[in-house]
Image (cartoon, rainbow, N blue to C red; front, side, top):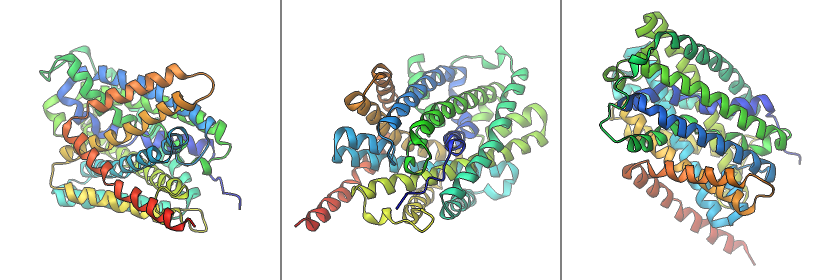
Length: 426
């Protein structure tokens, strides 16, 4: 039976841009506020690293045009056990990222309707409503999810670029003084802000994950990956830089919708409401893309016998229903378990866990090209590997400890799969 390939170049590019431009651009300025303009140095490192990774993933997609992205590349280069570890880590990063993005949606909705997020419990309910709305869209089928992604991406990319360019006229050099208000040394600030800003660039690889559902993947995926990373990276960098320059640091630190706060400070309440609405649409697009990717990762791993076979079951429309439902349920559990934190604290906590978990697959994918890649690009892959490890080291002990616990939680699953496979063998 021929596998349907409903995702073309526009849908694949929209998947990259839509997955990257989400919670990061709209809530990250609050997380970066303590570091002031010094965070721009972290941005410079992260964007360079993201482009190195995008170039590496483009080559990997041509070398191994298989569904699964980082998992598939690691399995081809290093074998089944490392492949499982990366599949599990990547899967964890995606569903925990879905939780973080949903929390950011609640922040934007709160700027429009403050009563909806007046308490942590109400904010959690709003976050989960957004998550399950996107879950239902994905359950309707890959083609419908792809169309929704194109529409939601178009609704946010151009207004976001317009906001950043127009708002530059209201920002002067004096707005970035002091350059480093954190009290930390500049190397410390750069290291810390690299992993924070990397959150806004996570998703650059997502076009490689549903490769089996993409038309002409050897051509489409590299184009979508590089173009999507460049457009989303520049738009996000511009917007975050402008927000830090427009809103006082003490106000920005506690804001659940910093971009809406910036628009309100500059042009009045109506502009703030419009920006909050744009943020809500943008973040909804990111959730939609990540739900799709989460299910595709577990589908690829299950087809290879690495994840339980139940994840490989698809409905007649080709939707891996169990993968969609399990990923969304785990993200729901993470939001419920942590909802008592303030909105910004909750977002930062989940952000660090998710980014730490995704940097390991990034590093493994770069190493896969160094081990089994053919042709050029080895120096690019080596730099991408070094960048991934550098960013990972900046996550902090708490986030790394949580990441290690979640990674170790996959060991029983792997052992169970090995045992089941041994039973089936004569």
